[in-house]
Image (cartoon, rainbow, N blue to C red):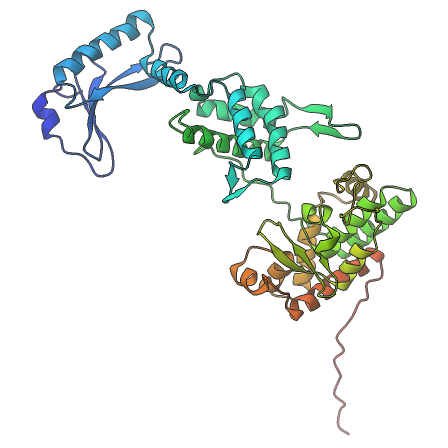
Length: 433
């Protein structure tokens, strides 16, 4: 603790440029002065919270506005209240600030306000308002994971241990649900490491929102070590493409949703993201220039080249009179969101670890197999590569269209089982007589 606090000792302590300095007193123990790197010196007490037994610090006041004698008297009174009456001045100050500002009290209320502002476009991701599809997922994670586990807790009281508990309860499926989401929908939430990591990401955003709104001084999610994401980089082999194509044909014969089946084929032949195809409007197809003019993608507005096989798949699918969508929903005015058909096709084809996004990875794999450069593949997929974005923002290079033609043709051939195996013929020189 040192030799105790004196005015001379406080005055003669110079700030450290990189960290705070704390000077301690002997009477009372737990009383001290913090010297910030800025040079500001403040009196404080350190004590163990009667509620949590954790060490807490409570600022009494700034040196210069309070004398050492005044601060010492106040410190003795506060420490006595902690010891004798179970007081918790740091927590009481936080709660008083909440009450004075009419701030959010519980995590449930924080979630309500966060989602309200997110739907209003006030919560951004990479500088842009979150998309409706993302907000729908966020709302589900709030309702099914965050609120059931920690919704009752006060915002200032959330600790890193609470973050750990939220992660592990979602990961182990302790709050798994199976519920109807509408007349024809059903949500089966089983948890898992990936779902848990995404939930923590969302909760971290909420805690940042809480800090920005002065509901607490820090974000307890910062520094939380998430397990590495399981990369879904599985790609379809030529024989697996054939089995998938055969499975889709079988589902068509069974009378399954033809629009959803057509959307799956389009995903395979374009390498596009799921939402880019399912929400594709007919007005976005530029058949003359053989491209898609996408108003809203992960990388912003884009012109995306497509091969002839992909263009045929987009233009020849089932239509719905009056609908602007290439793949309209079976009921209502929206577009299809059906993924059950794909899961059924994967089962019929006996494919393991294949998800819808695997079609995008597989498209890229086929392009690389055809020996296109990574820059060309990035252009085909619409990746955020500055050189590609700048070059293809307003038009599509003929070389990219030619590449899209070859890739989509090979994938279509594999899915139909008609892939032509070609070989390079090397002439053998005749021996001279």
